[in-house]
Image (cartoon, rainbow, N blue to C red; front, side, top):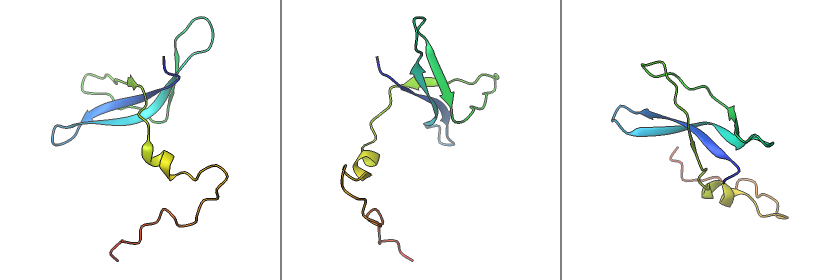
Length: 88
């Protein structure tokens, strides 16, 4: 069992494509009773039936964020993440 789940909602965009938005996280509750604690960073809007569905998924690794961090013991280089190809 994973130690954290992403709490997400799904919505259809104008083209009918399902889009997912992360709104929080769920963690296994401590103690003998089991269960989960859920922390929400945003509140979902109810659908036409007045329901707000939240789905829990195992988080995907974020390679971009991990690779962007400086290695331990190495100072971050100022401006290293800037791209100078902006056309203005």
